[in-house]
Length: 307
Image (cartoon, rainbow, N blue to C red):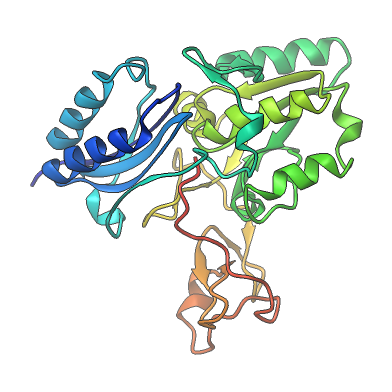
């Protein structure tokens, strides 16, 4: 049986002709039988694709040959083409939709004015050094709030955002002004959201901003569930969530009975479809799965490409 894999990567680099890159990526992926989601913008590329292992390797090699993409950090995980409904390759103004394309400056080295990069090991060193100074490091979740329901860094600040576009409003509201003089580490799934978020925070007066390089994925590879992370990692494909080891704990609560769970289900109200946590017993029960908000909340975008 053929081995299958999913790859996740992004690259911030100026692209003079995003449409040409989109067409090339679509032809390349289609020819290799890959499925997934790729966003191209004037700021670079953001991709999650899966398929047969050999085909995925050929795709990665070809992509790395493109000027500006040589140094992409490719993250590999279990899964394949079947975890995606189709192949989608689009051009958009932003790689991640913060709604502030004019605020982002990108050069050949990446995002200009972003946070200081930290490896997983460097993150631990920062926490230890600031603790020795009598200062706590603030973990700032750069994902949509529902993702943090099943996994997050211990004690993290989780902004109440439903979409990435809400971060600008949250930062400008003054709700986090008390963090501007503290060491703040932004984190997200694979690192792309924090590339932008850390730059937006620095532009708004946050003085000591860091970003977890490679995101939660790289941290999980390094420390599994023996570090500062707890729970599962939400992913935007058919797998829905992944765990880093057999020691992963379930920190989410079933909306119906309160039991521990990491399983999201769409509200069965077709006008809602909001992702809600239900345990296995409740999901298999006879009652319809309805979100606790009475289906008044707008539906979340369950297939958006944000890493």
